[in-house]
Image (tube, rainbow, N blue to C red; front, side, top):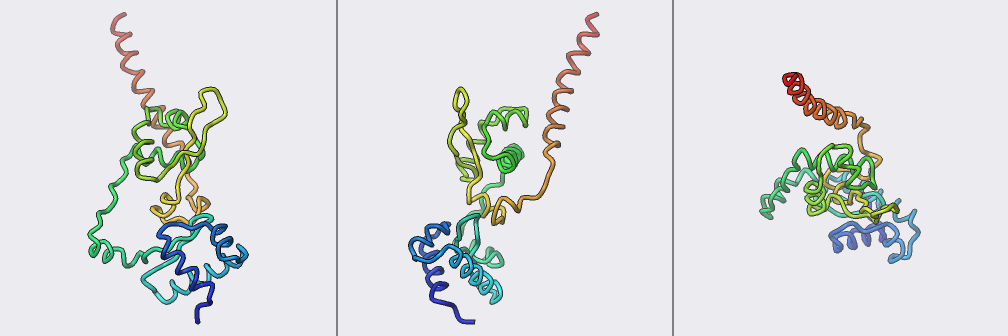
Length: 195
């Protein structure tokens, strides 16, 4: 199947951009209805996948981005000598999970769920561009709100937040309660010994 003029244009724009380009921006600049952009981008994505092309176009919520096919990742990494991104620590994964499922959310809410100071984890995730600031909550002190980024979607292979698996975050709360119970237990034993 031959590519349409719009498909060729989409490929050229996404290749040159090197980052996600919103559907609204594509629609405005190419002077084409957003529905047509989505239809042609989907056809192009299917075509590239069907032909097992070395490049793919991925949808990231309301944007598209061109990237290399995951099957070629080892060769791309080896050729470009890029390092794998550092792994996320357990505290960073917990923090990222809370932001992903409760966004937009504040650092105080993250700390309430985790039961520990999360400033370092939030800072590390901001540096890695997996979360970003999303304004401020309209309460006294005006705390910063955080949400996930398109990089989060790309790193975890998601096209939208709707693809997040359903999970119960009770494990975090259970662990917090266990830590609380454990911290209270020695105090009670010492009190009993004093009597």
